Length: 589
Ligand code: F6R
Image (cartoon, rainbow, N blue to C red; front, side):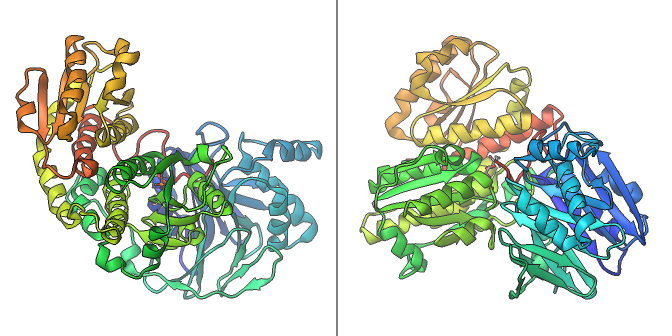
């Protein structure tokens, strides 16, 4: 949700900022802008659309500047609403939502100040400028202003005539770094990564001052904080697309590695903190959003069926406002690829307040969720660039199923050999090649249904989310048996149906739903591990995936669904890596 960069040093700032913003583009790509200062001359350039639109100003002189790539919250995507926002001598880039912006804006307008955008962020520029006039010190001005803001913010601020960048953070991520004669700030590591740079993750309430000599961090009372740096290395650089046309395609191919690197086998866990926390749990609560929520649903099927542990799966944005009941012995598992999703963080915090232990399952070490949890288990998906989650889903399953394998070992319950999954995912990718041929049937669809029961229903929900995200086709993942209770009214010849059947106990039951939709003219596509079903007359096309324990089958059955979404998006002319309206890291409520 919006990416921030800042640079002060020996190099020309504009190219550093623009290259940094490109690495943060997954956070938003409605519009982008930079402010660069050359002596007392502040130049502010904003463009609608992708960061590449700023390339024409790479030649700007000046060695200090800030930049922003936007995902609109307040105000439409437009140059007027793009950052940096300026007032008086101040320029600001902001990520987050200043929730009392309307009231603050009214105060500023009562002083006769004029606003030129619809954003909450412009308010920050006004309030900081107001304090800067009286305090004449940028750090003090940002400190005083920050106290007036409610909501979330990561800010980087420049002032005409001041050779420094001041930053502040509450709830939105911000990392500062120093190299030889340079200071940097960014919303995420890849925009900072260069071998040997020393990085510091700002904590909530902290501020930082970046000069050409040093980076200083201050707490909420402006006391200097000393902290061990974390040394950046090249592996944190943004990956390229390699031989693939899109990151999404490449990331689907990386699923077997992601799974292998995310497994957490019982022997590795022996005597670990994870093992301890797991073995004391009577109930599991999952808190997560989007694809991670679907991983949680898959985990719940397996946890209840295979280990008989009662498990509830909560949409994090709902959990946090439901006054949740958290019985003694509850272990809360917060699942988040980015580790920065605002709702998941708030839900995990609430679970802790209610005396639950919290395990974070995340793909990002040092992320906010891992700092909040009792224990973190890292998934090994590697960096995921495409906005639509693919390999991180299977990586989350590998880690979550591994937790169950640890518990199964403790309880002497036999468990599917998870180490087979890497090869099985590879085989599934190969067997799904034919999916490209399905896409023509989806181009004129009015809506699409994904049907399944049990774990297949969880897979259906994730398949549907993927399709919606990157094709913009209305779609639903539905319980196969529930269709006839109302939703069947929507089905006709322009409603392709994808059925997922991987559980031998449920073949006939889900096939009933297939007959029902076929009878209403729907074309039916099948993902299954049962060859005999592929030959049925109702089935227009099928993918035969390898068999595994049915409770764990979403690990495999979601792969063809990810590929289906990818191919339909391409056929519709959409960019699968950067779907409209979406951003990868959702750091606002
Ligand atoms: C879907 C997708 C989102 C995320 C959700 C949670 O493809 O990427 O639904 O899964 O925003 O994000 P994390 O896992 O970073 O908490």
